[in-house]
Amino acid sequence: MNTDWMRLGKCKDMDPAVFFPSDGVGVLVAQRVCAKCIVRSPCLEYALVNKISEGVWGGASERQRKRLLGQRRRQSTSSAHPTSSERPTVPVRTAAPVGS
Ligand code: SF4
Image (cartoon, rainbow, N blue to C red; front, side, top):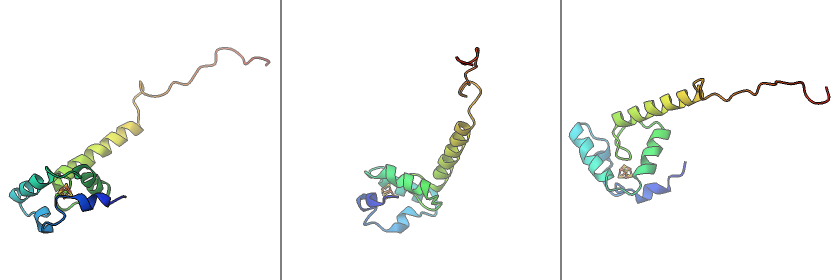
């Protein structure tokens, strides 16, 4: 996965500890920085794809990313098992093929 976006992150020159908070107040501090970051979206996607469980990434806390991963899992499961109305219909042959 491309990581060029990392050099544009607002946190680039900050203490990494800010993004690995130990309490809710710390999470809010990190999220305030992320809210002004132009690479928030790829940062969040990177954390989700790589299943990074620690810290604040893309403005999302550990709990929020866990929830997002759960939603994605459920969506991919439901699209893998379409309901009967979503299933493609199989054409029914009503006459013998020409020339038979
Ligand atoms: S979204 Fe937050 S953690 Fe990600 S690069 Fe930007 S400031 Fe850093």
